[in-house]
Image 1 (cartoon, rainbow, N blue to C red):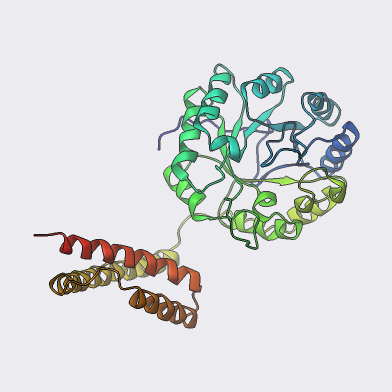
Image 2 (image 1 turned 60 degrees about the vertical axis):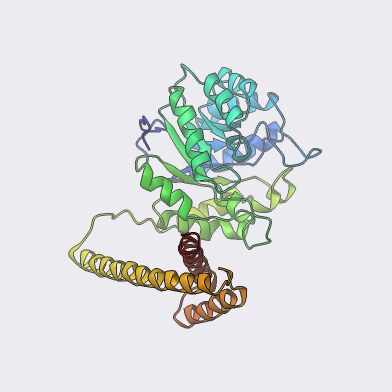
Length: 356
């Protein structure tokens, strides 16, 4: 994926990993904004975030204080010398934010899922030099995420980064939004120079999950963190459960272990060679398995049997899942592996069945 990128330079200073953006989910009152920003500034945070406009899933909730809050953000800039960031979702938002001198813009997950909205924002940003962070869409669609980035980049925005905030799920899990780390990892593989910032607040949905998610993001080589922090989280007008105080945030950041060494060593190269050899063996074994699947497909064709034998498929998933657990692997991981293997086996058998 080709993107024309230049350094984000969010703070105007030499940035040390992780870049930290912090502040309340929503700007609620001038007092709340200033108290929170002051507390964060005292802890060394240089980038203050607050939602001015809040796109909500359902009507009736707090949808942001609106343009009135931009003046409060200007006070943070002037009095505390912090850079300020907010979310934009429409042309009017972009226009108002730029007029107020907002330093960094981000585009939310619901907006990124709509190509028409992304194009409207891109058109509004033409001729502007401002850092823009693009959150992942609510659904796990990497191509949609990339498409949004391309629209913004083609508008001339080169100070571009992404925010990983997890993906929505109908299932009740430990996380509010599933991290699905493999998706931002694949994005990094395709675009190595694209900065990735993790949003542990929205992934976890609970303040006790913020710290471990921050550490996971650092261990995966993410460039920064955007964390919701409020002077009085329990009284927050939105997302109260996932916000932390500036003091707690400082404690979390202080405990982070930052691993910056990326170069290979001789010992690591040896281990990677072993992995390569095992991968080659796996591919050869899978090819052998598929050859047998094709023979099974031929037998089913000759005996007028359906391709999918449900009882046999269930037996495979149950047995292999249990074997995986005994070998120290996650049952869901093994299930996913064999679901994909079965899908390819079915494709191979269908190919045999449909040949004259």
